[in-house]
Amino acid sequence: GQQVMQIPQYQHVQEGEDFTTYCNSSTTLSNIQWYKQRPGGHPVFLIQLVKSGEVKKQKRLTFQFGEAKKNSSLHITATQTTDVGTYFCAGPAGNQFYFGTGTSLTVIP
Amino acid sequence: SQTIHQWPATLVQPVGSPLSLECTVEGTSNPNLYWYRQAAGRGLQLLFYSVGIGQISSEVPQNLSASRPQDRQFILSSKKLLLSDSGFYLCAWAQGQARNSPLHFGNGTRLTVT
Image (cartoon, rainbow over all chains, first blue to last red; front, side):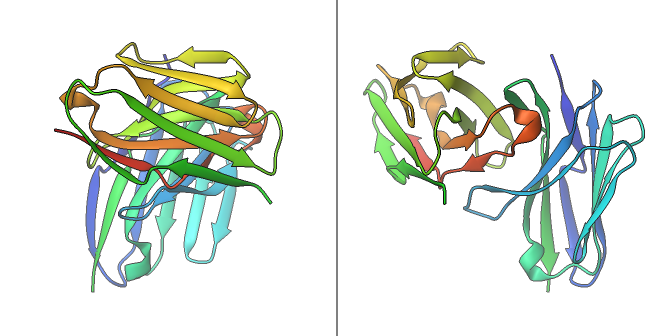
């Protein structure tokens, strides 16, 4: 079955530093979605990438979809304490969503 | 606008007791519905999903079951809880195929089996 891995599993950064999480799928994806889960909360949809090589930005967040549509990355510039949480990628397949293992981000003030 | 309701928010149950978690969606029709479980500090494990009334697909064989008695109602049940059933249970909905629609999660139920 489809597997989606994310690295790193955990990341601690000083406030103001950059952060990147990487997502890799064992199969080609039709698209990739990113979610953020705040501590104690539920995952919230951030963005969807569809095209090969696509890059999208949301303020300090930059999302990329690989040329082969098997990997993706999320980069946060100048992290803030509000960025704390776990970031998940998800690869849809039919009616199912295969979630990555998640990267837990801690921002040290 | 669409909303998803999930209850209860927290639950403490003894081993061997039954379980019933309910989830309802408002503001949309014929949604795809999902139950996920998240162990502490871990990822999201898909338990069940449903594309219509009475249609349930199980991803992980275990002592849990799901039912969809109405279009916008999804229920997760167990006849006898195990300690390993503890976790954060999340209900979610999507409109149509996964590639065309993101998941919208409820607030979740924190289940502790003692």
